[in-house]
Length: 93
Image (tube, rainbow, N blue to C red; front, side):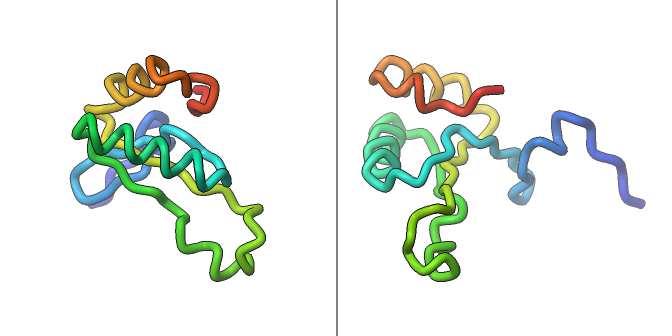
């Protein structure tokens, strides 16, 4: 039996049993690298979604990549980026 997703769940991507949420969406590869370094140093699990889409777009850079974090780490990740001066790059709710 399949259950219906709530509105909140439908906005989040399910990975196994973990709910992951989009933290940042950008096509700026330097920004992605900097944010990944910050998240890694803070031991916050994350991954870059759509990173391999450049094969389809021809490396033009118009498809944005998304940095995803687990829902349980979202507040900590957001605060980390705000403290580091990247608050303006965070996805707006």
